Image (tube, rainbow, N blue to C red; front, side, top):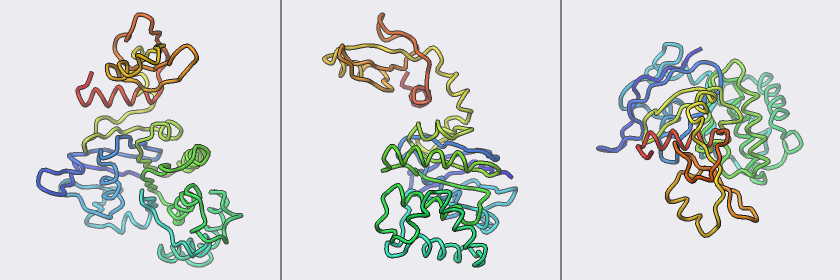
Length: 292
């Protein structure tokens, strides 16, 4: 099982590119596609989901060009777009039953699959409630259920935790981690903690271009010795944030404790600390943009 992206570019207008010369090879596991808003993630996801075609380059699913033969991929594809919508007057059983029919599942297979998925996404008790009454997190869970109806070999989820509360976000991350198995999962997000919980590979994207593809462990190694903890008074916070790359901060009675990502300590009083993926993301993203 292989998804191969070869020099893919997508142009929307003259000199306006959503994706530019993007190449990547994926095998079973969870890929975290990580980048800021506007980096080109959703454009790439729509190309991979056969919703739009690249202007240049090609995407191969097990050696088949998906632009020339889209059904080769569509039959084994599960897709949760960023702007996923529901029919508010349908309940979960009706909604999933309708989409199962659209995907070509026979009634017996569909009923069995729907029952199993409602268990998996913890919506059994709410299966007869109208979807319009669901919370954002519940709608996302029904979204992932519909994406899994055909037991896909390729699962694409685009910004799945935007708007979710912390508890729903953790539940969704755990669900994605459990779903990997013998399939390719692409998790497209700008939220580093979503990737940290599930990804076996990380691809960083900015301005439509692939910056790097690596493992979480190697990404962490790239910033070893470059993360500092620094206690500053509130009055110096604005200057510290202006002059340094701050990955997080915690307010305390004696001041504000900053995590700063830098090659050298930002202050003689700063202490080195072990890096996390947020630190590594900030370091590598800024390095790609020439801001070190």
